[in-house]
Amino acid sequence: MTNEVFTCSLRECSSFDWYRLPEDHRSPHDAWVESIIISEPSSGDRHENRGLEIRVRLLGAYHDGTIEFNYKGSSVIRLRQCVMRRGMAIGLKTRSMSEDTIRSCTR
Image (cartoon, rainbow, N blue to C red; front, top):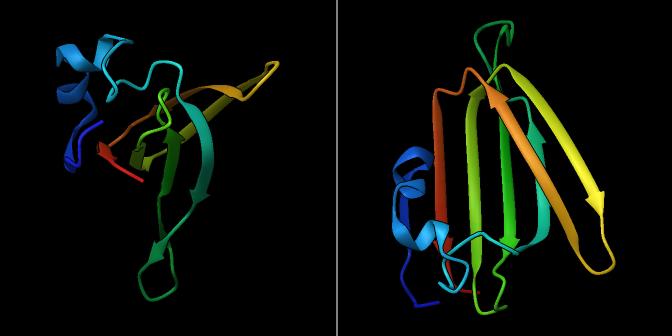
């Protein structure tokens, strides 16, 4: 992975060749979960305006960088986790996402 730091929409990033190629160090394929943070920030006089935010931080498959997925404005979260021999695999689906981003950077 390079020292490159970039931010793009999930849709845009998933259209790049590097996203789908496991041999590319920037690809999330075979990355390990470092953390998952789910929050419900609020605003308004009574904090009545609420939305779900999810941040997933992955250690790249080659252990030479990190990848962050940030989902904002989701209304539904569905998590599926499989514990494997080493590390963790996760499937994350959200609905009504107003802003999905992927950020990749080195450790």
